[in-house]
Image (cartoon, rainbow, N blue to C red; front, side, top):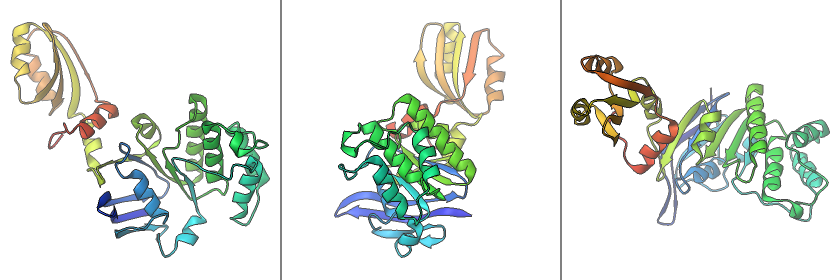
Length: 298
Protein backbone atom coordinates (compact mmCIF):
# COMPACT_ATOMS: atom_id res chain seq x y z
CA UNK A 1 0.00 0.00 0.00
CA UNK A 2 1.25 3.48 -0.86
CA UNK A 3 1.08 5.88 2.07
CA UNK A 4 2.14 8.85 -0.06
CA UNK A 5 1.47 9.38 -3.78
CA UNK A 6 2.80 12.55 -5.41
CA UNK A 7 1.30 12.84 -8.87
CA UNK A 8 2.91 15.24 -11.37
CA UNK A 9 3.17 18.02 -8.80
CA UNK A 10 3.91 21.51 -10.05
CA UNK A 11 4.21 24.61 -7.90
CA UNK A 12 5.07 28.11 -9.08
CA UNK A 13 5.44 31.29 -7.07
CA UNK A 14 4.34 33.75 -9.71
CA UNK A 15 6.82 33.14 -12.54
CA UNK A 16 9.33 31.46 -10.24
CA UNK A 17 9.64 27.69 -10.19
CA UNK A 18 9.08 25.79 -6.96
CA UNK A 19 8.81 22.24 -8.31
CA UNK A 20 8.24 20.92 -11.83
CA UNK A 21 6.40 17.63 -12.44
CA UNK A 22 7.48 15.85 -9.23
CA UNK A 23 6.18 12.28 -9.16
CA UNK A 24 6.96 9.52 -6.61
CA UNK A 25 5.41 6.96 -4.24
CA UNK A 26 6.22 6.00 -0.65
CA UNK A 27 5.15 2.55 0.52
CA UNK A 28 3.80 1.75 3.97
CA UNK A 29 6.57 1.09 6.48
CA UNK A 30 9.25 2.63 4.27
CA UNK A 31 11.85 5.25 5.17
CA UNK A 32 12.04 7.36 2.05
CA UNK A 33 14.99 9.72 1.64
CA UNK A 34 14.41 12.94 -0.24
CA UNK A 35 17.69 14.64 -1.04
CA UNK A 36 18.82 17.71 -2.89
CA UNK A 37 20.63 21.00 -2.36
CA UNK A 38 18.93 23.96 -0.75
CA UNK A 39 16.42 25.45 -3.17
CA UNK A 40 15.93 22.22 -5.12
CA UNK A 41 12.24 21.92 -4.13
CA UNK A 42 12.25 19.56 -1.13
CA UNK A 43 10.44 21.86 1.29
CA UNK A 44 8.01 23.01 -1.41
CA UNK A 45 6.98 19.39 -2.05
CA UNK A 46 6.52 18.73 1.66
CA UNK A 47 4.49 21.90 2.23
CA UNK A 48 2.21 20.97 -0.65
CA UNK A 49 1.75 17.49 0.85
CA UNK A 50 0.67 19.08 4.14
CA UNK A 51 -1.51 21.69 2.41
CA UNK A 52 0.52 24.50 3.94
CA UNK A 53 0.68 25.72 0.34
CA UNK A 54 -1.37 24.51 -2.61
CA UNK A 55 -0.21 22.93 -5.89
CA UNK A 56 -0.30 24.85 -9.13
CA UNK A 57 -0.93 21.54 -10.91
CA UNK A 58 -1.04 17.86 -9.95
CA UNK A 59 -2.17 16.32 -6.70
CA UNK A 60 -0.94 14.45 -3.64
CA UNK A 61 -2.67 11.59 -1.84
CA UNK A 62 -1.79 10.56 1.72
CA UNK A 63 -3.38 7.42 3.21
CA UNK A 64 -5.45 7.35 0.01
CA UNK A 65 -6.94 10.75 0.86
CA UNK A 66 -6.66 14.00 -1.07
CA UNK A 67 -4.07 16.26 0.57
CA UNK A 68 -6.21 19.36 0.05
CA UNK A 69 -9.79 18.16 0.56
CA UNK A 70 -8.94 15.82 3.43
CA UNK A 71 -6.14 17.82 5.06
CA UNK A 72 -7.72 17.85 8.53
CA UNK A 73 -8.14 14.06 8.66
CA UNK A 74 -4.64 13.54 7.26
CA UNK A 75 -3.12 15.87 9.87
CA UNK A 76 -4.43 13.64 12.68
CA UNK A 77 -2.03 10.90 11.61
CA UNK A 78 1.02 12.89 10.49
CA UNK A 79 3.98 14.07 12.56
CA UNK A 80 5.84 16.97 10.96
CA UNK A 81 9.18 18.55 11.80
CA UNK A 82 9.86 21.65 9.68
CA UNK A 83 13.36 22.77 8.84
CA UNK A 84 12.91 25.81 11.08
CA UNK A 85 10.73 25.69 14.18
CA UNK A 86 8.95 28.70 15.67
CA UNK A 87 6.91 28.77 18.88
CA UNK A 88 5.14 31.01 21.39
CA UNK A 89 8.29 32.07 23.19
CA UNK A 90 6.71 32.93 26.54
CA UNK A 91 5.33 29.39 26.98
CA UNK A 92 7.14 26.72 28.93
CA UNK A 93 8.13 23.62 26.98
CA UNK A 94 5.78 21.43 29.06
CA UNK A 95 2.80 23.72 28.41
CA UNK A 96 3.54 23.87 24.70
CA UNK A 97 3.79 20.09 24.35
CA UNK A 98 0.64 19.44 26.39
CA UNK A 99 -1.17 22.03 24.26
CA UNK A 100 0.04 20.22 21.17
CA UNK A 101 -1.15 16.86 22.51
CA UNK A 102 -4.60 18.32 23.20
CA UNK A 103 -5.14 18.67 19.44
CA UNK A 104 -5.36 14.88 19.31
CA UNK A 105 -7.88 14.58 22.13
CA UNK A 106 -5.59 13.14 24.79
CA UNK A 107 -2.61 13.94 26.97
CA UNK A 108 -0.23 11.00 27.33
CA UNK A 109 2.18 11.94 30.12
CA UNK A 110 4.04 8.63 29.83
CA UNK A 111 4.73 9.23 26.15
CA UNK A 112 5.74 12.82 26.87
CA UNK A 113 8.25 11.76 29.54
CA UNK A 114 9.64 8.97 27.38
CA UNK A 115 10.39 11.30 24.46
CA UNK A 116 11.70 14.24 26.48
CA UNK A 117 14.00 11.93 28.44
CA UNK A 118 15.33 10.41 25.21
CA UNK A 119 16.07 13.84 23.78
CA UNK A 120 17.41 15.22 27.09
CA UNK A 121 14.89 18.06 27.00
CA UNK A 122 14.14 20.19 30.08
CA UNK A 123 10.41 20.82 29.86
CA UNK A 124 10.38 23.36 32.73
CA UNK A 125 12.21 26.00 30.69
CA UNK A 126 10.63 28.74 28.61
CA UNK A 127 10.86 28.51 24.84
CA UNK A 128 12.69 31.84 24.50
CA UNK A 129 15.44 30.57 26.82
CA UNK A 130 16.26 27.62 24.57
CA UNK A 131 19.14 27.29 22.12
CA UNK A 132 18.49 26.43 18.47
CA UNK A 133 19.34 22.78 19.21
CA UNK A 134 16.91 22.58 22.13
CA UNK A 135 14.16 24.20 20.07
CA UNK A 136 14.77 21.50 17.44
CA UNK A 137 14.39 18.88 20.20
CA UNK A 138 11.00 20.40 21.08
CA UNK A 139 10.00 20.02 17.42
CA UNK A 140 11.08 16.38 17.35
CA UNK A 141 9.14 15.53 20.49
CA UNK A 142 6.09 17.48 19.32
CA UNK A 143 6.08 15.64 15.99
CA UNK A 144 6.18 12.19 17.60
CA UNK A 145 3.90 12.62 20.63
CA UNK A 146 0.75 11.26 19.00
CA UNK A 147 2.46 8.18 17.50
CA UNK A 148 1.86 9.25 13.88
CA UNK A 149 1.44 6.80 11.01
CA UNK A 150 3.50 9.10 8.76
CA UNK A 151 6.50 11.10 9.98
CA UNK A 152 7.70 13.94 7.74
CA UNK A 153 11.12 15.36 8.58
CA UNK A 154 12.50 18.41 6.77
CA UNK A 155 16.23 18.95 7.49
CA UNK A 156 15.71 17.45 10.97
CA UNK A 157 19.23 17.46 12.41
CA UNK A 158 20.22 21.10 11.93
CA UNK A 159 21.22 22.47 15.32
CA UNK A 160 21.62 19.06 16.97
CA UNK A 161 25.01 18.01 18.33
CA UNK A 162 26.39 14.59 17.28
CA UNK A 163 25.08 12.82 20.41
CA UNK A 164 21.57 14.14 19.89
CA UNK A 165 21.75 13.26 16.20
CA UNK A 166 22.50 9.65 17.13
CA UNK A 167 19.59 9.58 19.60
CA UNK A 168 17.35 11.08 16.95
CA UNK A 169 18.35 8.45 14.36
CA UNK A 170 17.74 5.69 16.92
CA UNK A 171 14.35 7.13 17.79
CA UNK A 172 13.22 7.38 14.18
CA UNK A 173 14.41 3.82 13.57
CA UNK A 174 12.28 2.63 16.50
CA UNK A 175 9.24 4.53 15.25
CA UNK A 176 9.71 2.91 11.86
CA UNK A 177 9.86 -0.55 13.46
CA UNK A 178 6.63 0.34 15.26
CA UNK A 179 5.08 0.73 11.81
CA UNK A 180 5.48 4.42 10.99
CA UNK A 181 6.31 5.45 7.44
CA UNK A 182 8.98 8.17 7.18
CA UNK A 183 9.69 10.88 4.61
CA UNK A 184 13.14 12.25 5.41
CA UNK A 185 14.37 15.33 3.56
CA UNK A 186 17.96 16.55 3.78
CA UNK A 187 20.83 18.03 1.81
CA UNK A 188 23.28 15.92 3.86
CA UNK A 189 23.73 12.70 1.94
CA UNK A 190 25.26 10.67 4.78
CA UNK A 191 22.13 11.24 6.88
CA UNK A 192 19.80 10.06 4.16
CA UNK A 193 21.95 7.03 3.38
CA UNK A 194 22.02 6.11 7.07
CA UNK A 195 18.25 5.96 7.49
CA UNK A 196 16.59 5.41 4.15
CA UNK A 197 15.37 2.30 2.34
CA UNK A 198 15.05 4.25 -0.92
CA UNK A 199 16.35 7.63 -2.04
CA UNK A 200 15.00 10.18 -4.51
CA UNK A 201 17.17 13.04 -5.75
CA UNK A 202 15.57 16.34 -6.62
CA UNK A 203 17.40 18.81 -8.82
CA UNK A 204 16.06 22.20 -9.93
CA UNK A 205 12.53 21.19 -9.01
CA UNK A 206 12.56 17.83 -10.78
CA UNK A 207 13.02 14.27 -9.54
CA UNK A 208 16.02 12.55 -11.06
CA UNK A 209 15.67 8.90 -12.15
CA UNK A 210 15.55 7.01 -8.83
CA UNK A 211 16.83 3.82 -10.49
CA UNK A 212 20.11 5.57 -11.32
CA UNK A 213 21.39 5.39 -7.73
CA UNK A 214 20.99 1.62 -7.55
CA UNK A 215 22.55 1.22 -10.99
CA UNK A 216 25.54 3.36 -10.14
CA UNK A 217 26.20 1.35 -6.98
CA UNK A 218 26.09 -2.00 -8.76
CA UNK A 219 29.11 -4.11 -9.68
CA UNK A 220 29.14 -2.48 -13.12
CA UNK A 221 30.46 0.77 -11.70
CA UNK A 222 33.72 0.84 -9.72
CA UNK A 223 36.42 3.15 -8.49
CA UNK A 224 39.78 1.64 -9.42
CA UNK A 225 43.37 2.31 -8.38
CA UNK A 226 45.86 0.66 -10.71
CA UNK A 227 49.63 0.57 -10.26
CA UNK A 228 51.75 -0.54 -13.24
CA UNK A 229 54.51 0.56 -15.58
CA UNK A 230 53.91 3.83 -17.37
CA UNK A 231 53.34 2.24 -20.80
CA UNK A 232 50.54 0.05 -19.41
CA UNK A 233 48.91 3.04 -17.77
CA UNK A 234 49.22 5.05 -20.99
CA UNK A 235 47.14 2.43 -22.77
CA UNK A 236 44.41 2.29 -20.14
CA UNK A 237 44.27 6.07 -19.81
CA UNK A 238 42.87 6.36 -23.36
CA UNK A 239 40.25 3.61 -22.94
CA UNK A 240 36.64 4.61 -23.57
CA UNK A 241 35.56 2.34 -20.68
CA UNK A 242 37.08 4.52 -17.99
CA UNK A 243 36.85 8.04 -16.59
CA UNK A 244 40.28 9.13 -15.38
CA UNK A 245 40.35 10.87 -12.00
CA UNK A 246 44.10 11.16 -11.39
CA UNK A 247 47.27 10.07 -13.15
CA UNK A 248 50.68 9.65 -11.57
CA UNK A 249 53.88 8.15 -13.02
CA UNK A 250 53.10 4.62 -11.87
CA UNK A 251 49.47 4.90 -10.76
CA UNK A 252 46.14 5.53 -12.49
CA UNK A 253 42.95 6.30 -10.54
CA UNK A 254 39.80 5.95 -12.59
CA UNK A 255 36.10 5.09 -12.60
CA UNK A 256 35.19 1.99 -14.60
CA UNK A 257 31.82 1.27 -16.19
CA UNK A 258 31.17 -2.22 -17.49
CA UNK A 259 31.51 -5.87 -16.61
CA UNK A 260 34.22 -6.32 -13.99
CA UNK A 261 35.35 -9.62 -15.54
CA UNK A 262 36.15 -7.84 -18.80
CA UNK A 263 38.44 -5.44 -16.98
CA UNK A 264 40.11 -8.24 -15.04
CA UNK A 265 40.75 -10.27 -18.21
CA UNK A 266 42.28 -7.20 -19.84
CA UNK A 267 44.52 -6.50 -16.85
CA UNK A 268 45.63 -10.16 -16.65
CA UNK A 269 47.62 -9.67 -19.86
CA UNK A 270 50.00 -7.23 -18.19
CA UNK A 271 52.37 -6.99 -15.26
CA UNK A 272 50.27 -5.24 -12.64
CA UNK A 273 51.98 -4.00 -9.49
CA UNK A 274 48.85 -3.37 -7.45
CA UNK A 275 45.08 -3.14 -7.94
CA UNK A 276 42.17 -2.05 -5.74
CA UNK A 277 38.48 -1.63 -6.52
CA UNK A 278 35.58 -0.27 -4.53
CA UNK A 279 32.02 0.91 -5.03
CA UNK A 280 31.58 4.67 -5.43
CA UNK A 281 30.20 6.39 -2.35
CA UNK A 282 26.83 8.06 -2.44
CA UNK A 283 28.69 11.30 -1.83
CA UNK A 284 30.53 10.83 -5.13
CA UNK A 285 27.30 10.01 -6.93
CA UNK A 286 25.69 13.06 -5.43
CA UNK A 287 28.50 15.29 -6.66
CA UNK A 288 28.21 13.73 -10.11
CA UNK A 289 24.50 14.50 -10.28
CA UNK A 290 24.70 18.03 -9.00
CA UNK A 291 27.94 18.83 -10.74
CA UNK A 292 26.32 17.84 -14.02
CA UNK A 293 28.93 15.18 -14.73
CA UNK A 294 26.78 12.06 -14.79
CA UNK A 295 26.77 10.10 -18.02
CA UNK A 296 23.99 8.41 -19.90
CA UNK A 297 23.69 4.84 -18.76
CA UNK A 298 25.92 5.49 -15.73
